[in-house]
Image (cartoon, rainbow, N blue to C red; front, side, top):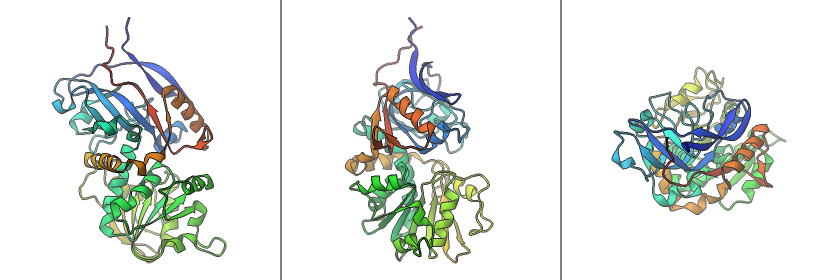
Length: 386
């Protein structure tokens, strides 16, 4: 019997279902891995909802895996049995974007091509972390560690985080550990439901606001301006692609003093704002890719509001950011554990993904979904019979 097949969550024609797919054999330079825990992120939701045209039928770029087989020429440090995290963004090869251009981790077996292996995108992990559900937070926390490392140079007195997805929550949780215990945190939520969830958590921001509070002059008040206080301001825009530009403009209007802004959220290719004349915002964000260059590129300019702005952004991270995130999760797991709100197997995950694809309701089984961690295949040898 040919058992060279594995289960995968496949999206096709607007449908999401579990299917069997052929299990490939790795050739020179390639790795075959068994994903252990995979997370679902905001860009995954955009693909499920048809808002992005990324071609990979199997999505998922967050999580950990175990090496099952290595093709000839692979570094012995990536021998079978090694627990790893795969960096989804190649800094110089745009053909590799895990879970977007090539099949991702929401399957029991995944082939990692030679360009990613040779590019150093497969990083060994401590076993205690790679085996746990917290591995679903590794890649998004790495993006946060990257952002905060840049903002730290500005010595912000206040960190403003816009967006209540996983990355937004991670930025709030990591702020005092990466920027110092004196930093104040202000967290803007998309919805009242998100705000209510944050209120119930131990590791919430100092000030919680909603998207309505971004608008200056609401009900005769300026809630965001009042919340920001005095001193240098750092901003993380952890926003969906269709919201980043509006949120940037609202922040600039509410914070006329000096500020540093990370365009972590996506942007349309032609995004511009009259508040920053002549600045191609998407180009600023794309100037840093996969952790390169180091130090990262940023632009210093003056907004029409009079504020001096340091603006930067980034696509992807470097392996050093993944290692930093792994160390952070290992050092303070309880600070992040409650963000993994749902843990399921592959069949239940497919049902949740169908629910999320159908609308913007983030509730499953009566609880708000922040991070879904999907438990996949056990780390056993692959079946590759002829």
